[in-house]
Length: 383
Image (cartoon, rainbow, N blue to C red; front, side, top):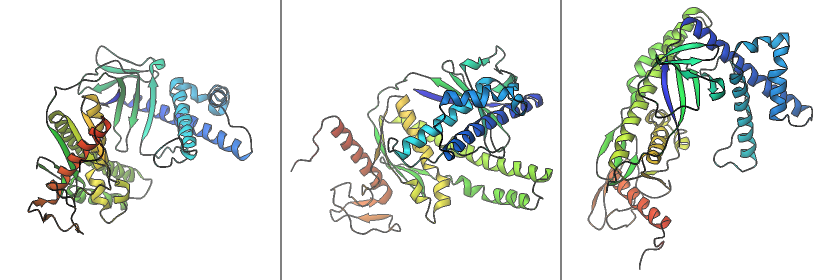
């Protein structure tokens, strides 16, 4: 399986200028290719193939005075920009024809130099290397210092250099690794995600919601007000914009760190993990949108899924329409109408349930049932 390893870069002033040229050249090639295909479509011409597009946008463009500066950066950067454009078109065509599952994919759009995220990718053809001194050597950029927080498990197949809105630089390595199974354990867990508690486990444990955005809201509002008072386009405006971006980046980093630590602990302690398949996009349209985005459920579940695959654990999503909260985990009797304000209830069989813990237990039972069905177990329960 493929994993990404991100490390912080600290380029010098000259290297930052070289990276800015690389960002600009990759963005120009992408936009030129997109414009060429759009104009051809409007004129009723055949679809420009990938090879013809590369020849016209890169090879021939370098020979013109208007695009001669494309030769100042590595050719691999330009080729990868066109590869991103071709991938975007393939995903768009597969989406509108029904071959791609999930939400519809929009057609490619032009890239702007004002985008919060700028990135270029170097493959093995670019011959990037990690020097003996621990620096990342990039073609036509130089040896960039890296803060290595851990060792790479294998040789990377590509590296993407990213500049975020806060002005920070990162190197994202793609590494092919083998599965690393953890020792077998008998415990399994069902997880009910929420806002009062971030996660409630089927064994009764409750993980508090850190509410990182709410805690940083005062600092973010202060930085936003300072930005609004500056004249747009001035140096003070640019400085205030970076301060606001760094505050948001700090909150996002803390949320990612919390999700990594919790997901790693759950995967190590349990052989199977079952989570309800929440419709986060729908919940984000309600009055709880800010709290839903602050929780970061999708990020946490994605971490659980890939870590389970890496360490040989079982992971499954339970249907979102499964009545986990309103089903008695002791006798299986469904309860009646139950508003969200009801946090505990008593079943006619005498069992007293905490709503969230009961939901986590039912998610665990549903996950086990689906697992038995997939392994050839009986579909219908006995009479």
